[in-house]
Image (cartoon, rainbow, N blue to C red; front, side, top):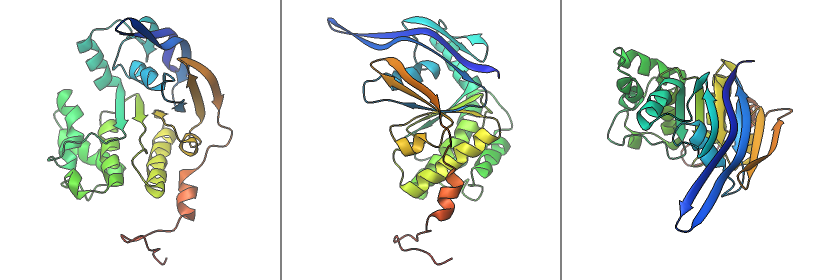
Length: 250
């Protein structure tokens, strides 16, 4: 299997006055192409710092990071921005959509930054892939939370990134909508995408194929999930509710 993320001896220190916080301590890990990984750990464990490092949102204090064969740990801010736009797609807990902009315009944004010309068609195809082909002109306040997260996923995949990263992507969603979002991630993974999510929810992590647990800035557990939960099976067993929370007769 081809390594996509190779981290070796990664440390991250934050200086806060006279105190130094060791957010990451000598972390080494490899994530291969096509994996579906959950990053877990209590508050302050280093999981979010690790996600920022591998997401090229921050640089390590020491250590090496190779993303898709390219050494990125010592790149400057502009170079990191180029790497993010080229290789990575992000999905956030709070969706991070532009509020007065249509779904399709939100999805076009990464393409605009990349200088892509046929943005409309690519953005429309991405929205269709996540089941929102009929909502391309809707603004975020005209969409449900689950639909907004689908727009965010479409925006993450529109550049055909090497890795899709989710930061608590189901944190603001109800149980059924969370399963719908995990079903989307599983489908993307089945089609070859490497997916990495940060989550504090065990039931969400169990949809993944591998769980990496952090504590005190170190990896303390790195193990496969023997029988990942199939989100489509869970959805099939859940009742469909109307807008008032009443089950809809099938």
